[in-house]
Image (tube, rainbow, N blue to C red; front, side, top):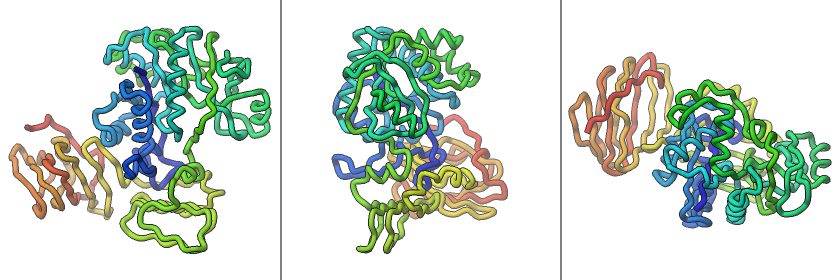
Length: 439
């Protein structure tokens, strides 16, 4: 059985408008699964791990913002180690290692594999992870890396320089992200891409953590986490480790970090209500809206539409999207939560209209607002609302009004759809006080 830590980070800048501050690229449902339903990179990677090792213990290290989406897509099938705030990969891995040891009871002699949550790979990648774990278990090196055989001189990745061209080699040096000319020189030396995949015995990682951070156990580290220095695992550990080796991997491996690479992995040119005329060439369209998109004569383009916005871009320009998205001032209009999802439908000066969908058996927190009234209209399903301690069964067609200051929640018996209208001059996500849940 493998112990796997999946690192889930990143923001939604480069794949806007399908991603946003709470919906990173790994959560976008764009790939056809075995049942022909759309799946995200997160659910795809989880499925692939389970195919290779059905008993794998999977822990996802992530931020508070992403935890709800992970629970929405995977439920209770994985463990989630939540960072109190972002502190780069070394503190995140230290926290996850302490979580495995102190919360899950993993022995210091057990091997842990760490990898990103969002690679686009085939099952051979996860077979290689098993080989990586076995090399770490043998203990000939303290740290075992996976090096990706480069397919072009990329400027996006760091490089690992192995001593030999053997399938497993000791490491000569690490190189930072180079320019294209330097990358060609590295590849000529037999360099490998550093994909951020590595394995170690848990005790080794805990020892490194205690050397750099003063803490006793997982709860203690969690409490002082915000005071830790932001530092990457490569700089804090990998580049300073003397007993280190690398395993070559030459299977398919794509980092879907831009629209160009993302569309390469699509198994169809269109998702959603899309029509392309016969003059469209090398154009992919993703439409999450319930309205049609018609493209005519589009060449080498990507079009994406969601409630957060619409992107129309030439593929040669799509990689330059980040500064333009950062200049946009807009809240996230769609998010998946542990209880379901919400979509902002309309924003006015004194009102906001939101579509809320709750999963069966789930509920909103018991809460109140000081500066706004709310009106819920039940569109589909059945459940129960609680207003200031009073329970009421609700079903399709019912309307519930909650003035500012009253405590309220809703509990879904079936899948429950609501239209929530917020009314007030100070509508803000900060205007929310939570209380102990009522039965």
